[in-house]
Amino acid sequence: MQFIDKIIWRAVDAVILLAVISMVVLISLQVVSRFTGHSVTWTEELARFLFIWTVWLGLAAGFRNGQHPALNFLIVLIPTAFRRIYRLIPAVCAMILFGIACWQGWNLLIQQISFNERSATLQVGMWLATLPLVIGSGLAIFGAALNALFAEDDFATPVDMGAENQENLS
Image (cartoon, rainbow, N blue to C red; front, side):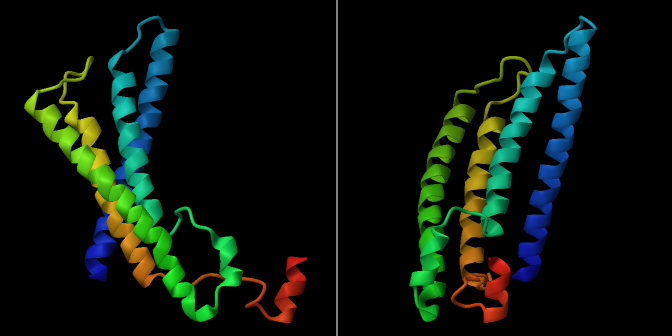
């Protein structure tokens, strides 16, 4: 399982890196072309598509790494034995939210394919802008579940730290 998990997230990171580098190149080309008076119109649309891919895949990677919203200030009020269970609450909420987003994105994707919707400039299927919503939502569900189940408890609170570390916080 860890091998597959590693391959999936390395591929996601590679796609994000490629998309960000491509966006920088495209936007630079767009700026230079506008200064020369010969605007390259397709760069804006392609950069927008890449931005959508970056946002949804980056969101999924963030959930895999545990960078999702959580109320960590409540940790000091919870007994140590229940902290693992507390980690499941935001993960389950995220999985429900992204399950709904994935389902609705899938329905939109099917509609765009069936109606053969095309983008204005590039004339590619608009489903290419919806596909990252479905993939990113599915990966966010997967990532949130993995993080909730296998991440180590990193809830370092002043209550748990020794006296020598508490002095460093002041």
